[in-house]
Length: 290
Image (tube, rainbow, N blue to C red; front, side, top):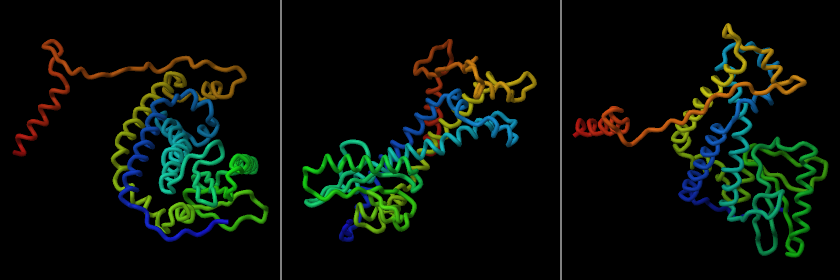
C-alpha cells in the first residue's frame, strides 16, 4: 500500500528550468513531425466519405482538417514522451525503469514503486490493461531478488480517477493532483507545473506556426497535383480510389522539394544581399533611437 509522504514543497526555480527544457524538446519534436509528414500516408488512413459528407469543397480547408486530426493525436503522444515522463522522473528523483511496462522507478530502503506514466485516464481497453498487468508482473519477478515490497502504479498526468473497480487489479491507479502529490509530497505540484510554463509556449508557438503553414502549403499543392479536376473542384472519385480501391493507386505526382538558401556573399551582378538589407535596417533603427 502507498504510504503518504511528508508534505514537501517543489523547488519552483528548478521546476521552471526543467519545464523550459522539456517544452523546447516537445516543440522540436512537433516541428520535426510536421516537416517529415507525408500527405500520401495521411490520406491513406483517413475517411474520404466523411470529408465528402461534411461538404468540404476548399482544398485548404481539407488540408487543415487533416493536419488538425493528425496533430490532436500526435501531440498527445509527443507531449507524454517529451514532457510528462521526464518531468515525473525528475520530480520523483527516480530512475528509468529497466524493461517495458514502467517509466519511473522510485526506490526506498523497503519498497520499489514502479510508475507507468500515462497522459489522460482513458488509455486502457481490456487488452492493453492485461498487457500492463503482464509487464508489471514480469518486472516484479525481475526485482524479486531485492526482497523489497513491489508497488506497481499507473500514474495519469491529468484527470481524475475514482475508486477502483470491483474487479481486482494488479496495480494501483492515481491521477492528476493525487499522482503529482504522490511523486513529490507537494499537494500543489500539479498547479506549479502549469505556472512553470510561463511564456515559453508563446515563444515556441511562432516557430511551430511557421512549420504548420509550410505543411499547409506543401500539402495543398501536392493534393491539387493529384486530386484536382480540370474545373478546379476536388476529384473525390480519384481520392477514394487512392484510399480504398482494390488495386493500389500509385502516387502519380509529388510536390517538388525546393531548398531555399540565403547567401552571405553578394556581388554586383546579384545585387544587394538580403542579410545586408536586414543589417542596414537594424543600423538605421539604432541611429533613429539614438
